[in-house]
Length: 331
Image 1 (cartoon, rainbow, N blue to C red):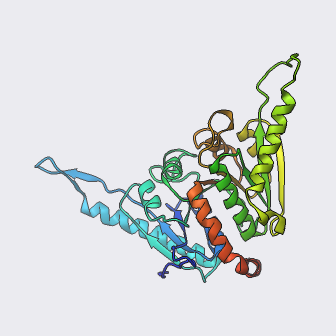
Image 2 (image 1 turned 135 degrees about the vertical axis):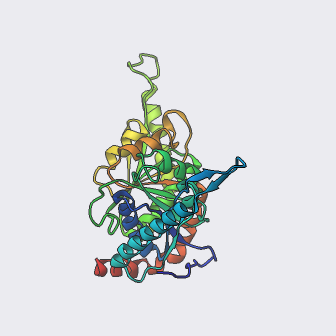
């Protein structure tokens, strides 16, 4: 159904952009996005892309086949129609916009995003559209987007995203991970979930050192301080008690620590890039491994987008309790 995009209090458009192609994975992502839009008071923008086959002209130029273009455009419009009906069954009050650009999915999905928006994609989809677990399109979107991207795994449980109990956030002390932690906190605030903050560290020696000063303990204490410093970056929000915040220090690789703590969680949140090496949270290393292995959705956050959403949550907090109550009543 057509509608006017909602705006937040600072004038920026707040919308959830969903890449869909009619496949079950993309519809899983759509349902998750609908619940996210409901709790954040955001609009949904559904994007179904198509690419046109081309014909060679006698002058050597390449021209689109107009007949095929119209068929493909109609198919994309039908996908939007199906998706709109699914959203209406979840919440008929949501504003749903649809677009069917003739472009690559990566460009079509990331192009409309502005600060304060979120993008939701399925981990797999039709070949040529949203296919390959953290492969072509999903990788392209997470690398190109300057806003938070949530990757929803295939065959998510029914109602995934409707309610959340546990959100896991990985930190390594980098500005990017602190921005992701802010976003994770705000998501917990909006959903009523508890937040588990995870920091991983590695003892770099395979055998015990017999030097006069054993360095294992100082390294562990440094990791403890870094974990606490990350939590302290949230300021008085933690002491306010609006979100229950837990923390855990894991002697493990960052990816394995997040995957282990993410068992049974509703969402894992990582920064788009970190410090490098074993401690990095760079998509392509830790982020890529987490998206590959997680059984729950994974949010990949760029710090600039996280800061904007952090400010938005301040405006939206007063209505969060009523939104949760309405969500519970609507099932």
